[in-house]
Image 1 (cartoon, rainbow, N blue to C red):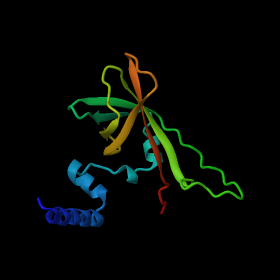
Image 2: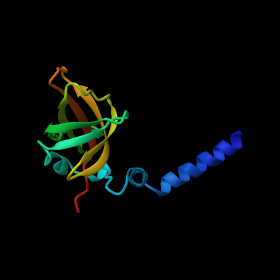
Image 3: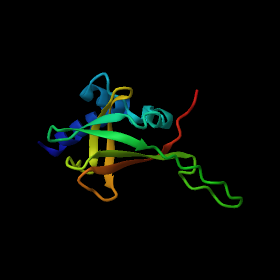
Image 4: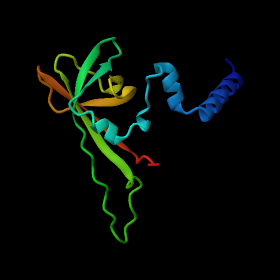
Amino acid sequence: MTRRQFLYHSSALIAVMAVFPTSAFDEMANGRNFRSLSRTSYFQLAAQINTQFRVYAPDGRVVKLRLLKAPLTAPSPIVPGRRPSADADNEKFSLVFSGPGDELLAEAIHLFEHDELGRFNMYIGQIGPRNLERVRYQSVFNRPAPVRS
């Protein structure tokens, strides 16, 4: 492929991505029941504490995780005379899961599936010590607060 062809194809791809949001590509790739986490509120996620999520590992395994907790960080206080941080108005929370100790998942983006929430991609990483009975994972969010209509 020549440089000119590469630039032409890259420009076309960028134009398509500008017109269609990435969530549309996710839905096409993962089916109708796919949901973008950007469209899922903290409260929808936190309502699923003590429920089971199916996680699809790249090697074809399905690992079942249970949502243990969903701590929400309070907004930073406004200090007179100080400029607030760039993420001061962001929604900050984490999701903590527990899974079987004999089926370790890599720190990566995985396809999750839940009976209420549908399918979505989410990054998880292992936290705390692993033992034969269980391993814990966490996903951390720091994102603009959703606009309520």
